[in-house]
Amino acid sequence: MRFAKRTAGGGIMKAILSRGVLILAVLVFVGAALTGCSGNAAKHTIAVGDCSTTAENSLDKDTIKQIANEIVETQGKTMAFGSKEMNVHTAIVAAYNGYDVTAEGFNDEKLPEAQPERANEFVYNVLAAADASDKIEFDIDLVKLTDIAAEGSDEVVLKINNEDVKVLVGALQTSVDTSGADFLGTILHWIGVAFSWIINTLGFGSFILGSLFFAILVEIIMLPVSIKQQKNNRRQALLRPKEMAIRKKYAGRNDNVTMQKVQTEIQEMYQKEGFNPMTAGCLPMILSMIIILPLYYIVIDPVQYILGCTSGVSNALITFATAPHAAGGLGLALRSNNGTIELLSLLGDNLESVAGIESFAFFSNGADVWGILEPALAKGVPDFSVFGVNFGLIPTFGEPWVLLAIPVLTFVVYFFSMKLSRKMSYQPTQAANDKATGCSNGMMDVMMPLFSVYITFIVPAAVGVYWIFKSIISTLKQFIMSKVMPLPKFTEEDYKAAERELMGKEKKKPKKPSGTRNPNVRSLHHIDDEDFIVQKPETNGHGGVKKQTPKADAPEQQTEDAPESKAENSESAGKTKTSLIDGVNLKDDKTETDKND
Image (cartoon, rainbow, N blue to C red):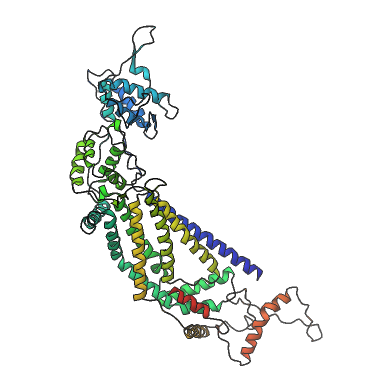
């Protein structure tokens, strides 16, 4: 028995660990899906473009291409230029516009007068600063860019001229993909069109109010799946008496072999009844995730899915908006590059500033990008503010403080919605693994709300509001279905009837040939009543029976086996056979069932 207890304890620990790993895997997957949305939106693949030179250029084509290639290799690295962190490419574009970002006291918010005629000088300063930087490995030969005025003189005359800078900037330009969306993007676009109609019609232009009606629409679409799930819950609940009969059959035996036998018999019973637990639990959850995750992308990127622009245009807008003023951008500091919802909330009514993307030196087809953005923005950008609070911003421990209410409400709503959902749905009995199940459920009740709080700190508050709406409406829908299609309740007689049915089936099973087992011995450590060969008593040579010497484990065998042997001997004497559930208090089972209801 001690071994059995240790084994059961190990099984509980394994169950806890396995459930914990599963929960962590789900959280990592969802987090990767949510935080990965448009995570690289502000980054573009820079390829060296046209490096053709004319007679007005001082540098040859190969030298300019070498410089461009080395700049491309440093795209992922930034360095401080005055009060602004930027990469070499951005600094080159700023120099091309006539700003010396290497000058002492350079402030991108208060730009001096532009001096485009000194662009070659400013570009050389950027390359020299990058070459001397410890953060960026820049292996350009600066000698190729200069001439020595006189022999023995320290005066350096720049060989690179403004025509060379123009070719260099052109070589670093990238073309924005303005082609149409793929199949999945097209589907999301039409869903976004519906969301836009809800915002403008039912929400009166308010993104927050529109999100409420959109969450209701999503739950209506999910209603058939939810009804199917509730029916499966009812069907599984109807099988509870039979499940409990199987568990009572092995009551008091908690070793792993017994637990495996119990689960096997329960699964066989499910199969005979035509019930699949997968369709009751995992399948609806998977379908929900398939529908919910794409909706997140729609909410997070209004430019692409609500205003109808392509993903390339959406990414280009973020690049333009976050570029420094000196480089021709809007100089906006976004707390997250996930989508364009925060960007639109910061722009507000200042949409005419986006027109600067037409001449933005990062793109070779800026005019085409603006040709797509202009009519899209003219449709009207949703209002992300409520009572003067901009919910397009990400909650932080700073202004505006009111946004911190979103993570708090998210935790409270998720915590209680999970508790209520578990109470309103059928929870299968786990017998010896109740401790593991309770521990894993406790982990879920805390970890999932905490994870949702983490998400609210990396996405705009409007997304958190949408998730709060969806959670409340989903819980309300489940409550209504639990009243329309309630889970069944059982009496003690129902459990006894299931016990009698199980006992009747076992009587009909074919028995093993006589002489292969001792019918009076039934060890608690053996699930299938393994065969015990009856040993013939040894004789003493005179026709008598030789006295047996008791073994060391005889007391333990007597302690464990004697009661059952007596019970079965009593049965063979003609006494009434005891029911499997006699003497077992079914009050707890009934109470647990009522709780599930």
